Length: 114
Image (cartoon, rainbow, N blue to C red; front, side):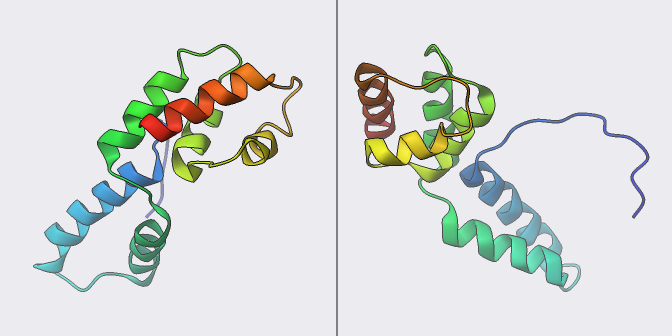
């Protein structure tokens, strides 16, 4: 399939991707055999998605209200669900700013509350 142009681009969490792929699998399973790439994508999403699509989208929305938060980082945090401050620091390692203890604790509170 040749793509001529991108009509829309959205950032999705892995849990949301898993939900979409499950819908595709159910629709295509009746009609045809699933392709290799689709089977691998479904397996990856099943292995690494944490929580439901609603939970992960809620986390992203709450994180976006914080200062020093970008959509890319919010989606990464929702996908990884870091449990420690060191994991959060690793996510922010490439950024031009660092987070203080209060900011780290605030992010971890959002992740744990979901």
